[in-house]
Image (cartoon, rainbow, N blue to C red; front, top):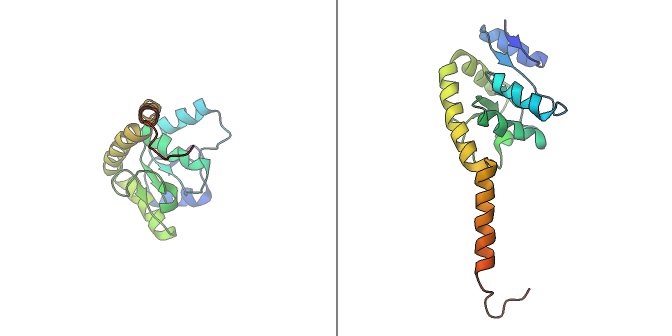
Length: 152
């Protein structure tokens, strides 16, 4: 039986099929940010159905916390994350549930993937890194004199 913070009936079935103790959760966006962060650090696995919108940021937050992530190809769309390297992206009920069972049964493999994902997220999405990149863009934009014939 799985130890559960909160989960849909489908996730509970999958966890029970894996016959192991783990944490599964769906983290509500309505929770205060500090509580969300606390839950992400307690998770052994984040399962995200890849619903478009702000909920997808949980993927980056989970990886930043070193939590393995299973999502869909839509869930990682637009992020600089690669399936099998930084997270697991599986489409369709069978592949998605098999990915969850694999992550539960082979936690070391999922943890290695999460560590690589964490490094990618910290390198690409950390605020200090983003601020530096943005500053570089502004410096470059303001350093070049306008070319002849350019209009504003």
